[in-house]
Every structure is written in structure tokens, then in C-alpha cells.
Length: 480
Image (tube, rainbow, N blue to C red; front, side, top):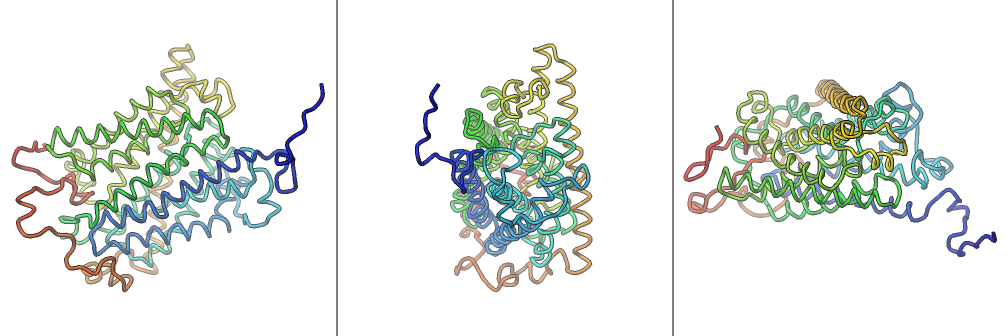
């Protein structure tokens, strides 16, 4: 049979060898950039708008600094520690990712070069640190943050990334399912953020009691970038342009929409007010919950996961948080523990229940190894289903343990050199004390005009973290 010649634009050349798919490479670069836009400017403006006016610059700058610092550390040593040759079963050997000979080689997965994979994985590492920042906004010493970012990337993130995502990691070999970072990114950032918040200490009492967003519309713009950017976050993880990538994208948005709606409905039922900030929280928990499962569950399961992600984190934030002395003691500014640690854990467990064998085979390329618990019963592979749930639980325990220990040690180490928390005097001032700059040349801290709050009512989420403590009166159900 005569061979059909390739069109001239598809012929292999030095910069595009036979093993490389130009379509896959193009999509991977686009997906990586979408994830990058979630951080810069997505979380920059989300944080900048969600905090009190005096902390807008500091909060945005913590995100920008983290993105730049992670990028430098990633190409110099971080990538190879996360995806290179094993040093121990949970950690890779440090090495640079700067030589073009290495960067032009085929990546460990996918039909594109290492350069693309380094970039793609870098933006995931960067957003993880920025999510951690959400727990310590409004009081962490910026000099301590400058040290925290490279240390945590090196001695925490690389552990979980290598163990779960590297083909040579011990949890990867066990068969854990983490499609796009429910464990590596969200559970890690939620636990690490909560732990860091414990060691850094709380904001000023008056800031904890009253921390109104300075610009809700700006916050919504950041939230929109975060949501749409998740198309690349989950759609890029098959490392190939195929139907599974399309399924992952569709499941992501279906789960997120459902979660947002459930959260808003619960706010209306119990507080008689649909909160915009609450809707953003529901959006985030939906995105987080579907992440470990995006391309390996059916559409109905994605909707069901949205119901759980819009209700269980709502309950932990609005009810359990109020009753727990530990949760009230730790000042988690943006409620990262609930939106990422709780939602990430939920996603990991639900993935173990709903993972569909054929979709797992399509994603992992291994038949009969990855079987969700319910499908194990249905197909009489009960042992395989039980085993999958066991591996998912082991992964949760490992990520929690690593992040509590490593984050605590890093914080204790940093405070030998600089205070973790700003001084009381500097916290009274905010941005001007920390950076000599202010976000807005206007008076006040976002407080409403006199009597406007009593006349029109205040937001249920004036303080994202303290929203669980707030008792509403006048026709609103009190959570007891």
C-alpha cells in the first residue's frame, strides 16, 4: 500500500521531531497559560478585592511574589525534585531544568517536550503557594513570606508531587487517583495554609470582627478568571487532545455550577439572603472537589459531587467552625481550610467511589487497576474497589501528615530569623507600613455610610473566615 506523504507543514523537523504532536503541544501550552492566568491576575485581584482596603496591596503582592519566586525555584531545582530521578520513594533528586538538550527531550508523559511539561507543572506549583497565602492574609510579615515560599516549595510540595504524580512515586505506583491536583494542590494548600495560620497567629481583633471586602466586583472578576481558567487546569491533564480532556472540562463546569447553586440555596434557606461571597465560596469548593475526578467520572457523578461540595464545606464553615475551639482559634482569613482541605478531601474520597473503570483505562492506560468502589461492586471486583478506597485514604493521610509536619518546621525555622507576624503597630496601618503604598486614595476602610448597614442589612460574609461565627437576627435562622 502506497504511503501518503505528509503535508509540508507536518513533516518532522529539528524543532518538531516525529514523536511530538504539534496539536498536543499547542493545547498544553494554552492550558498552562490558562492555569497561570488563574494566579496572575486571577487570585491577585480576587485577594486584592476580597480583603479590607488597607490590605489590598499586601494581599495582591503576596500572590505576585509567590508566582515569580516559584517559577525561579522550579526551573533551577524544583521540577526535577518533583518529576525527576528518585532520591527516595517520595522525593526526586534536585537538578536544573535549563539546558536545551534536556528541555527538547520527550517529557515523561505526553507527546511534547520537557520544556512544555516544566511550564505546565510550574503554574500548578505556583497556584498552590498562592492558595496558602489566602490563609495568612492581613498579618503575615512579608519578609517571612519571602522565605516561606521557596522553603515550602522545596520541602513540602515536591514531596507530594513526586509521590502522587511522578510515575516513580510510591503512591502513584500504588494506584492513587488524583486527576489534576485534588491531593497535590488543594488538600496540600488547605492543610498547609491552616497550619501556617496557626503559627503566624491571628489578625488584630478588630480586623477579625470586621473585615469587609474593599471591592466585591473586583473579587468577582478574579473569581471568574479562576473558574474559566480551570478549563486548562483539568482539561490539560490528559496530556493529549482527546475526548477525555473534553469530558474533564465539561465535568468541571457542571460540578462547579451545581456546587455554587447548592451553596446559594443553603444561604437563602438559613440566612434569607443570597450572598455573592458565599456564591464564590461554593464555586471554589466545586472546582476543588471535581479536580481529582474530572476525567474519570461520569457526568451524573460530577453533578452529585457538586451537591456534596456545595453542602458539606458549607456545613463545616457555617456550623462546625462555630462550635470548634480549634477552628475558631486559628485565623484562616480566606477559609482555605474549608474550601480546599475539606473540599479536597471530599473530592479524593468521592473519586474513590465514582471512578469509572473504562475512563480510568483511557486516562492511565492500565486496565482493571483503577476501579471505583461502586463499580467494583457492580462488576464483582469488590476487592479492587475496596483497595482503591484504601489507597485514596492513604493518600489523604500522607498529604495531611507531610504538610502539617513540613509547614510547622518551616515556620519554626523562619521565625529564628524574622517574625512571622507583623507588629501590632504595622497591622493597624496595613499596606502603607508594609510597602509604603496604598491601593486607593480614598478615605475609610470600606465601611458603609452611617446607618446604611442597619437600614439595608450587612453581608453574611463580612469576614470570610469569621462568617461562621456571625449570628443573624430579624427573620434569619440562627445556626445553633
